[in-house]
Length: 421
Image 1 (cartoon, rainbow, N blue to C red):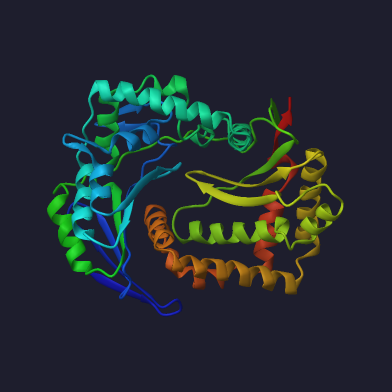
Image 2 (cartoon, one colour):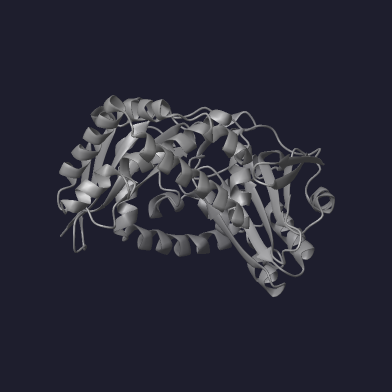
């Protein structure tokens, strides 16, 4: 295995690509009792149209999330229960671009790792079990749809995007999941749950070579072909400027979002992530001039906040919270972005935000889960997340001003509101 030592952050990573194409990353943590394994596939909620065996398949929205639920079924019973019996804490999640299965344990780690690799790589579905799951996930979807925060975000993405699958809810809809069959699930597993489309990341006091040997013994010998995907040809313009929904809420809530230029894979992806995060903090953070002014005027409260997100072929910066005059706050955000882009960013404030952002990235290394997910996302998007100190050094105030100028503008903006019935 190849060892890389990152002197500036004091971490080592062992990497190896097995003959079947599986990427293995091991981050040794000598002396720690906890050990953490994360087994992920580059397959998420946005991957509903893809090519398999030379034919394009259109699959129902929510199928990646549905498949995640069904993967714990085995001929012998349920893998979750098996892992829990061994003292592990297992779980899984589906995002727009990946599905991850993981556990942490202090005992029987190698036995648990074998269970994890086995059930994720060997699907077991029946038409009866698939039909039963539709009721369970359908109920979950209905509960989510009753959440104002979920509605704000979901309606915001549908306003931003007209063709990109970023506009589709990860869990799908009650109607869309009704079309999922065992055959469709097997097709999706065949396409995306191949070793060459996956990565195993382990963090803890383990022997990297032994981890690779376990994966080599348990997983299929063959990888799989690269699967072409269609995320939709998205135009530059936003789809809908404003969306509003009445719900049982005590005060109005809003999100205003800006359709940003999507980054390329590779180190540009990491750089844009750090750059967008810093731009968000400079524009909207709770120590920013805008936040302090709007808070002082009573237009926002402590619920206000923002974020920058990157998805396959898409990126967005958004902010929101409780507010009785969302249109006014949205206009103030755009005006502040213009002021910062044209008048410049104060050096002291820039350095303050830069130190805070760097410190946040550094603190993330204290979390085994965060290390594993970061390495996984980096592998899927072609960059090394542990090079963040070097990438931070390339970001200047002018870069942030350019980001704000290009992206935070009226033509890129949408407004999503939830108002009391």
